[in-house]
Image 1 (cartoon, rainbow, N blue to C red):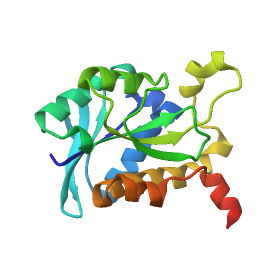
Image 2 (cartoon, rainbow, N blue to C red; image 1 turned 180 degrees about the horizontal axis):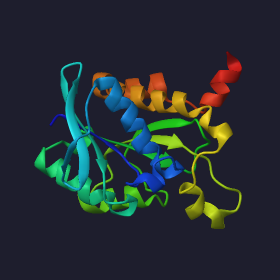
Image 3 (tube, rainbow, N blue to C red; image 1 turned 180 degrees about the vertical axis):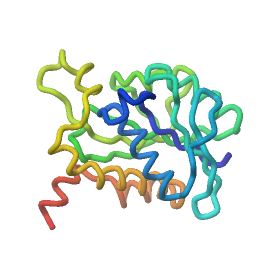
Length: 197
């Protein structure tokens, strides 16, 4: 499989609209856009195959809960023989404000248990990340609860645009490579863009 695009989140109704699940949400937008049904259930994941401009892609959502995401990623990457450089992981990021999108290859985990699990299972951090800002609470002791809370009403206003932006950025990495995707889609905050219109 040429490209493997993973959205991170927690399975089940209880978590589906929470901040930690923004990776799932963005992947769902991309899957709908590409008309790829995530109906296959194996490798501890829901997944489906398709193409982006002739490039084979596999979209997947690990079903192991966030802190064990690497189990599914390793099984998929190993079975479909995807190069690590062609592995793209979409995930929430507490260190970025809501609406921010950052694209990069490699780097640390910044305490993100899903990323830590992937690095541990793959033995490398050199995969591509699509980091989606969710902001963070002032009280750091609230972080664990914060990521498992639903987005607030005012946050939901920017969510559709952010998810579309993330889906388009992920597709652009496949189409044109990481550097071109960065120049086209990396942004500080979608809210700022709206104010400048």
